[in-house]
Amino acid sequence: MVRIEEKQGTMVPSSMPEQQNPLQQLQAKFKEVENGFRAWLSKQPLPVEATVVTTTGAAQGAAIGALMGTLTNDISSSFQTPPQASLNPQAMASFKQAQALSGGPLVQARNFAVMTGVNAGISCVMKRLRGKEDVQSSMAAAFGSGAMFSLVSGMGGPNQAANAVTSGLFFALVQGGLFQLGQKFSQPPVEDVNYYKTRSMLNSLGLQNYEKNFKKGLLTDSTLPLLTDSALRDVKIPPGPRLLILDHIQRDPVLKEKQGHRG
Image (cartoon, rainbow, N blue to C red; front, side):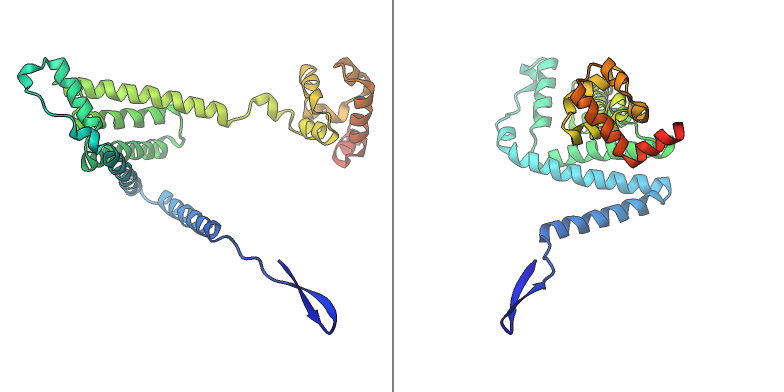
């Protein structure tokens, strides 16, 4: 920030340090502490790291579950336990599922703590042992968390083991699909990487509409120093844009140097 001070009839600019947003300072400090904690944790033995990660994940899940249990507490109170004799086994299993998903704060805190803690712990162990985080590790962690959630929440019928396996498989399939979907949208297509410099050049010239012409002719970034008028004509770029592109290449010191080396 610049403040104008009046000194002996003259206006003298005086620079003052800008005050940062307190929220941004807090976020930066939290990020710094988080990165330091993760760096320290990665150097610890596997049992220590897995224990800390599991405990942290369970605490986060407990907080989420308690919040959800508070919001759904009114719903859970409306479920009156019917006489078991009046219900067949399938109906009783459905009733227990409804109770498990709409329990009070303590019940939901327990359920979500187990689910998120097991997921975080298995993910940590798999990542340390395999050296990477991929869809297999993600599905294995989801299977374990789904199975444990089924056991502690009391969902399903009398055959808890079979229901735990079914729940684990369901969690694993959902998590695997979400992981693959996230990977697809988080990584740019391979061809886009090959046209990074080309796209930047066309955007600077206002010719971004001709990027498809470059891709159709496979004129990648590595071909920029080799471009000629005939090559641009072959991909159906009009004379005006061709002149602008060739002039830009001649003026670019990096591309011009590569042209000289090739010549």
